[in-house]
Length: 317
Image (cartoon, rainbow, N blue to C red; front, side):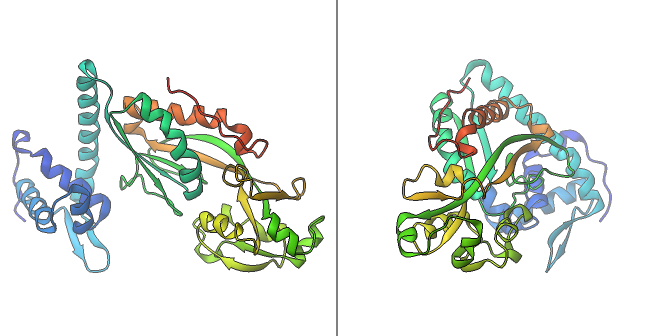
């Protein structure tokens, strides 16, 4: 492709938005869905940008989709910086005369997102009705580099990347069963008694984090009746009274249908980490939501650690 020296005044920010989405998703169809346009529009805008820059930004692969070239990787750094600057500028100008607004997407583990984050956000929505919050409670990691989310809440601290990271909270898991299950099965008074019982657990080779594989060390040679990649499936299956399950206290303790077994012998403590891209952390809407989630976790330490079944709510600052 012939090289051209392009004046910055000719650079179309809309073309860069298309470039960023393709770079993050590696698929024109996925980028089109996120931008609410069709596939041909994405392809055309990328082609126009490449022609304007006189550089090939992507190589197409049947197996890997759109793969960035060296030129594309160089442009990505500048395009993300421009995106962050524009976001900050728009936020600053808009906030001068209007209530705070914008869009924040939170990626979280499935159970925590559904049973803790979602209900806690009700107070935040009342205080900041013009901030749109997406909650993505999924049984896998979300990618901040692909901008699948703005804030991630994960079982593991990121080892590398341009992230701001903090430990959000500790949380505890305990062994639960229904009264119906206990009525129809042998009593559970010691760890040795668990050999007579069946469990609901994770599919080992599909668990998205080793932090989820806590059952085998506690109950060697455990018998399983049902396995699932979803902690919500564990919870709903345990309610049917056919097996035992180790569940997060924030999920199971508020449900009177479940009873905790061997509370002193079976206690699993894990951590949630919260992190985001460095360039987004200074946005006001991000700071407000980040601080609010930390306050929610602090206020609910007793629930998270299994000492109380009650969820507490805090008012946003």
